[in-house]
Length: 480
Image (cartoon, rainbow, N blue to C red; front, side, top):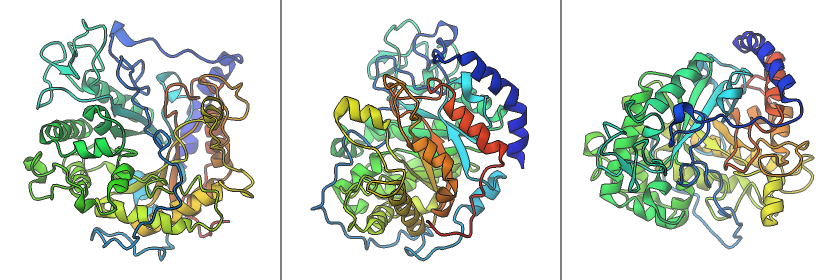
């Protein structure tokens, strides 16, 4: 297996890393070349006075509060893009995608700094592209002059920095070098780059939720949005990559109206170049973004994001044993299918955007899952949701941004406890049985535990997983 060979090559530097830790967390890398507005690392979102690129990119701020009184019609017409007809698919939905990647196991990935990215044979490494866009209609051709984001100059001379990802590097370098460097470094390590594109919220500069959904009607804003998305795709080109589109956003749209064809959004009116025949609705927006990915980055794997709280009943945090979890999953799947999601390659799912102990200490919120699966919420329920979602969409699911915390953490900033990472590593067959092709770990916000502050735990688990050759992603088994 290719994974074993890569593991052996990485064993020595990995052991050196554990030795160097000496029981204390590593520090984040310094910014490159004195650039005041760069990401401190290709795997870490740049702050620069703009909202954290990981801000509420998971489940949103209290977005998943259950509402037992919410009712939604699960019978949305089929999007006509190849999804299954709900609950009937029993084959391995991820087999074809994995074959194109030369993989056959449950993938492991992470959002990491450069200091740890090469110390384990991760299959995937992801970053956010977030923080806002350029103020001009078209992509800036220079960061050093006449380029701004949210009114802030993108020149290095501006101490406040520039929110647009295209200028997260020395300003005399052509825009987009940050991404090009990330793609090169990641593929050089034998890993697949993954881009989480999260720009609607920060670009709209309005409140998260219905207001950001409404802002997609703004033709001028959406012109910038599609122009930037095209620029991203052109940097990817013919490379293999995962493209993950707008976490949270589709769920907030579903809460506005369960029929995305009834939610206006600028599509053809804002992007006649690529999507001139696509309807001006949220349904059209999803279809447009996937169509653009096929056009400009044909070897990329693209997918929408499914939030378990999109129906206003959080199916993964649910404590009611009578809830039909599968029915909630079908409602989410049907909405995404109407947005063209079934014509993608995968659907992204997640557990939580924060470590469980962080929520408990900072907000008095209990977001723990029961590892014994005896009480709700638990892991078995989450896998029931992801399995039903995938079968309805006819696509495999990819677990994204699983919290990095572990139960040995001391319990303070960037060192919080959580039990999800260890459960996933201890039960990868459950991931596979629910049509999961991978588990990707990362902090959804800068105060959370991350692979540079967890005392090497993720690296240790990842290396152990691969030295044992991983777990096949296609299993002839049922959920336990």
